[in-house]
Length: 482
Image (cartoon, rainbow, N blue to C red):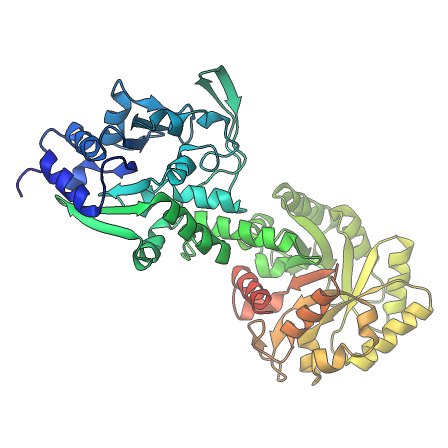
């Protein structure tokens, strides 16, 4: 292929619609064009020629972004924005206006920054031989939406026109995002023009259109720039941050069974963080029930979980004898907020022991129909015990009852402080949440309608049909469809 000349570049830019007086934020790869006579200076000169004395060329200058930005940055007429994490350099009539006081802005890419000023002035974003992954203005949409996965930057000390400043930016884009997935949206909007210069594909879009399209997409789906690759640790963590933010707005607490999350404390912590779940119910450890562990062993496990930012919500046993003193000692050692035990003929003794030690206790139905469970709980209340009930909808379904339409309509609703999020058919076959006969969706909905303050527990029964991460996703889907 023949060398690319300045005239070739100018003709292609004008064909795309650029004209004198325009403002362009350029992201580029010189190598993508092929052989360019005069190199990066030719590219810069071509843009400045098309834009004319009333136009302005802007390039990002943070990090290592290539020879074209370096060339603009090095020119004596270039104006620089004083900002260490999102800086730009500009040449042209609006350079001072675009770059001024960038460092004073609360966030790096929104109001009072070059990125929004370019949009306000009717400017463009041009991608020359690079894809949307290099499109810094997309960070503007993320920050305007104040997406929950944005995190504070470390403090930076840098020079400004008013002297040395030390500053952090509270909501800053982090690791990998799937910006290239937005290219189809931008093409289909018919607001992005595309062409070619040499070997390079060129994309040109009004900055305001870009921000508005991305912001609208993000308002519909906060995960709009996150990939769905389960092996992409960055996007898994950012999706978890979105789920965590959503759950923080609910009255209930979403809890993960330790058995569903993993065998070891570190594994449990990693799985919970990836799923966006901040509370754990310890029901087993290293594949063994709690009765096979000492209080000290569980205390060390609980300390590991807390150091990872997790809350030990409860201890649960799936079978129990006439006394629960060892479990109550374990609860004290782990600082668990409650114990969860089967509802049996020994419930009165269990409630008395828990009351004596001032430990909150919640009973769950195991092999009981609703009428029997209600009778036992009402008897405890008549004896003066304040107890909770963890409603196992799948267990009621196995007992041949319709959990929402029948079981919950008994006097159980007076006691419910927990809902086990598991599903099964009437024949006992485990199912993904919402796909069995446990009426899980209906139970979630009725509890949310009363601002339920208790626990919704992703229980170990979900292991048969998936992982903790998949169960959390399925639960979120149920919330989305209510």
